[in-house]
Length: 168
Image (cartoon, rainbow, N blue to C red; front, side, top):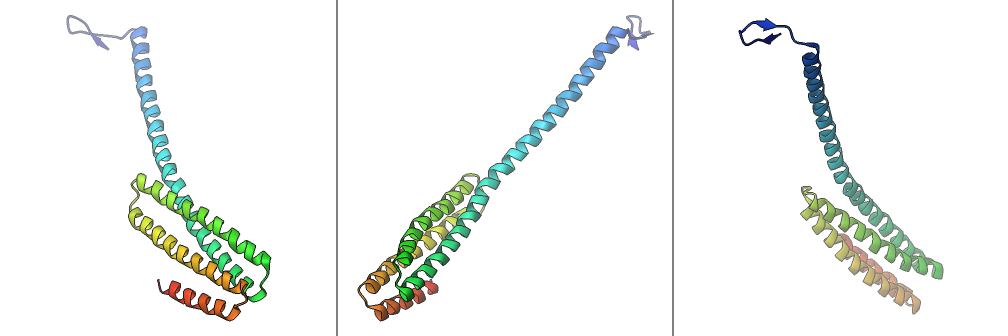
């Protein structure tokens, strides 16, 4: 019902009802579109956080696996003195470098996304990488001693470095 100039109630015309219906429908559609956009934005944010988190976990896992493999290779080389074990030991260093980079880059990405605790995680990556570099230098020394035929000295240096690394 529309009000006339005299204040009487006059029924709305079909055209007026149709216009009101179209306006109401458009408002509802705009609200639905706004909800979809808000939801999509929320999902996008979650995906942005998920990618670096997965990379971070992959980096840690890969470093752990590669260190375990490297330790196995040095034991194999010291016991069997097989050149293939030595080659695999040297190859594992390149893999470890790549995995440390993944770990660090993922932590940096998370820090850029304002994820809490990433300063501590970056410090842990740095500390672990520093300890690894010391470990690898000692491994090269052990390999050199083993190549010179000083097996017992190589084992002694390995044991000393292994013990000191476990204390850090």
